[in-house]
Image (cartoon, rainbow, N blue to C red):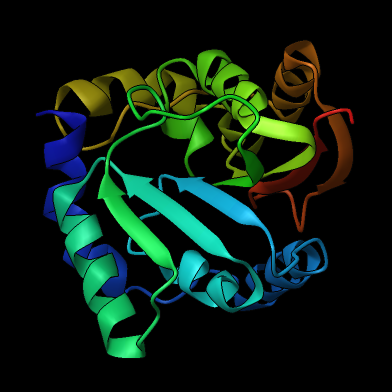
Length: 206
């Protein structure tokens, strides 16, 4: 099963699921919102069904949001139409293949996606190139080696059987190091609890 097929199959169920930790999610939204300005252009990859983009849209000029699941994007567009939100462009695509002009973005969002990539270092490098000097990279990432140490034994089999997507079994320290190796300065790092995703704000030097 391809990654696209895996997420297409789960899109409707994903859209209906409640936020696992609503308090942590609201904290992440508020922390991000403090960085937003009305003249900003944002890019979100792995946008899912668009929930976060729809929340932030009122505070920025434009959001370009992509996901490689056609069904996720179909749901996101429907939600935007229903809400009357006009300043988000939802597209089918991925960080690996989407066109991104150098130094064209004020902020990039990658929420619950870096641990699903086969090459997070390449993705982080693409983000660094696309951000303007001083731009922000906002991520929320499941650092699975810290959260569930035994998953490194289970994940490869689960992926082969189509029960799990590809998973990058990283630690929080490895994620932090990958950001710094790409040239970012990590300005904010928050772990709500030991079983939660790491929320990180990294900035491209001005």
